[in-house]
Length: 570
Image (cartoon, rainbow, N blue to C red):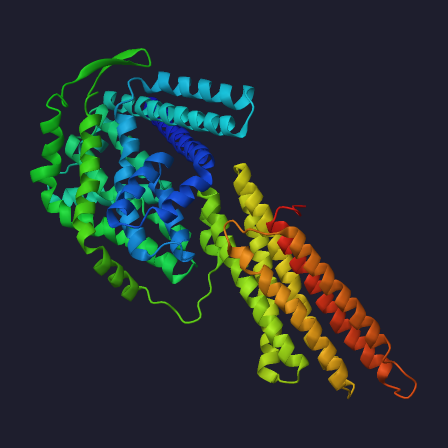
């Protein structure tokens, strides 16, 4: 009994430890590749979708580059949410991503000696990361460290399951798994789906199946059944990214899940007549055992079992893609009918919390969407403030100013917290700089909304005291508003522009001219105070508060322009 418990503990520790190394390796591998590819991958994916086949090719290449379909799915959720990509375009890329992700399984299948490759990868990556300088070199080092950990994880998972074969009681748990019936295939696929959803890596689930098949603990057809479930379970990551998000985000996640699930259901009838047979047909010696040494003991293993599993995984992904490709537009319309677009929906940053972990580039894109909302809201608030000053406002409009200012306060806090999480990760210089710039923009834009609300409060203060501004004062303040508002409208489009061309000297000169104009208006207002008008001092002070609010708005938009031009980064 003690021996069995000790064996169970050894197996659990070794296999789970190997799985942990594998997942950690995938994380470092992906982070290193993302940091290296960075904005280039984002631009490639956003623009290389002009044709349907190009979209599929984009998905294949991008997924092979970052070694994770989950990352690409989260990126697509961000692209569709930020209108950088339509839903049919995203579906085309998903088809390619499902094919590209099988490259990881091919790497695992043809690793000649996972243990040696693991140590070589870690040694090479460590040398690049710790002993050489340069951000790109460090990112490359992180990539090699991740790859080494993937191979070591695979080695320890294989080593961990090997002792099971020597104990009939434990071996029976696996050998009783059968894919000889459709019900058996469904049960195995369902278990693989749940495991993949939990660990969020189809490659890890398939690697475990490969290790068990290599040791002869599960049959080849059981390993193929695992593929059907793993490819559905891997879509869970997209749902994590879409929870609480926009309708477009949920549509992208649903498209990924339904395409993989429908493809698996449609192809299950071909399980025995094609998928189980194609691997052995291409690799006739797949079932030939070889003697290998594990923990100093010679054991028999089916070392050729991995290659047919890898090729079947790729063929399975290709078949799903071929089934869906002709019906992408119809499929997209179905998804849009299932997930309706609510009226006046506003994106929520919380929907991409997972994006912080796997794709900081897309996290910045999502934050930019919120910054754009703040930009447009401020222009609207300034327009509302003019109506208040001109006496053209009503109770609903004034309530709208207060409500929108509260919303922008919340958005600014969300963006700050969100980008703070992004910047706590390992980022390339350009992504980190972009995050810092967005943080500065949110602070300036939120301050603009505060000033619009301050104008309303000043006018209400006059009303409460039974006073109102004179016609002359109204005209002066409206002229101040128009100059500042024109400046805001000039600067605002640069916020969304990917590479704004800003003549910062011209902007600064214009800002200085507005500042001098406001100073003259302030002096003119002070001259309106007189003994013949007892209430003039209070009224003029309120009017000066309004003029000072516009002076601050001018300064905020100057700060925005300087930030975008790279002249104000602190």
